[in-house]
Image 1 (cartoon, helix red, strand yellow):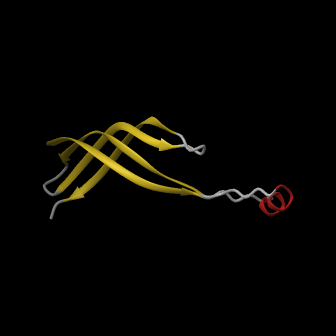
Image 2 (cartoon, rainbow, N blue to C red):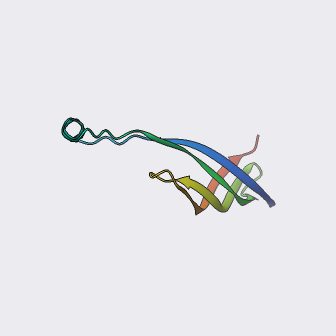
Length: 94
């Protein structure tokens, strides 16, 4: 069995476009058009990875991570939110 501990960071660029059924009508009557929004989502936290041999070349991997994610909001502000991940995998060693 092998255990790996570490820290990871990530950055993701996101873009949101809202499409409404009445967008043309709202634009014509009220002069409103929904602009596209974009932002960067940053995250940082610790992780642990365990590899367990099932057979000579067949390995089972389990990875768990937790941390904080900095998320932009629709009004231009941003907030920190907790995040967590769990990955299960089967590896074939060459």
